[in-house]
Length: 456
Image (tube, rainbow, N blue to C red; front, side):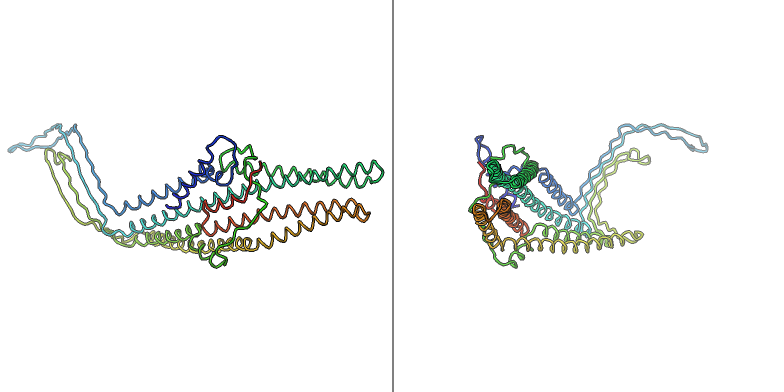
């Protein structure tokens, strides 16, 4: 599988980056390399793929010659005989005990000439093998999506904490100013309480962000197999010069066409339909004859009680024909069940196609409109900054009160947080677009990795 070879090269390169002992920033490429080595779900998927590929070899054996050798050696045999024996005109009852050796061996070769069931089972196994390839490709991309989403959760939580710390610092300074003004007789107790309430609310929000950070850290650590204790080494800060990646192609129809041919989930569904169709043919074969060519040779000495002391060397060759006549309705019931499963697989493919295309369209729209949304959020931040400056001047002029400043600060804080969230939402949408179209590779992971800076 070419994609698996390319992936291995990427992993090897990324793993080499992790080898030096000195501190260095760690990004998506390095974390993905660790995930490919440590994630238990991915490693289980690889074992499943190996098992599925062995099924094809097993099914192929039904089309190849079957050679069997058997040998039996019995060095000790004891036969006791008694019965009437006539000699001349006299009949006497006689008894006799004989000791003898016996052995027999045989070689038999059978080659199917016409076995539609074996052929159909092989075709079903081939479809199952291709489906296993698609499933492994899908799970490699799903691992990347899962790892990136957890990485984004971690980075978003870190940046929300940084913004909350700045907000807390501003509120603390505001609170101290209110206390000084109150002590000087220029402020009111109400203003102090208003600011203190906002400060305590910010502290509560900070606790929630820290919990989010710890949850995201543990989730990501479970995927990459490392504790990630030193978060400062991770490149999780979105760069200031955030520029969306241009969409190529620019029309959704082109993305849809590509996804229909390359989406790994749809590839699995197509092969599932093919497998179900061949399994239906397996049941159809129950109504057909089976023709085998066979050749055999058998050598025996004293093989039975009636051939003691006799040697046989027998060679035979011919054709075996087996024709089903009546099975009590079992074959018909099995065919109807297989036919129903074939129809089920077709409907399941249709459902997966609709789901995948809807997800693709949603991600495409989010990526297409990102420029306008970023401009809008940036304007909101700029307006909030101007409003805060004007409100502070209004307090000095006696036209605004303390609560107006607090509200303006909160509005600016919320606007900045929404702008940051929009960037992370875009990255998730872009990754989803690549995944649903079936072309999420190390190259795309590298493009996303370039969005992030180290936090130290």
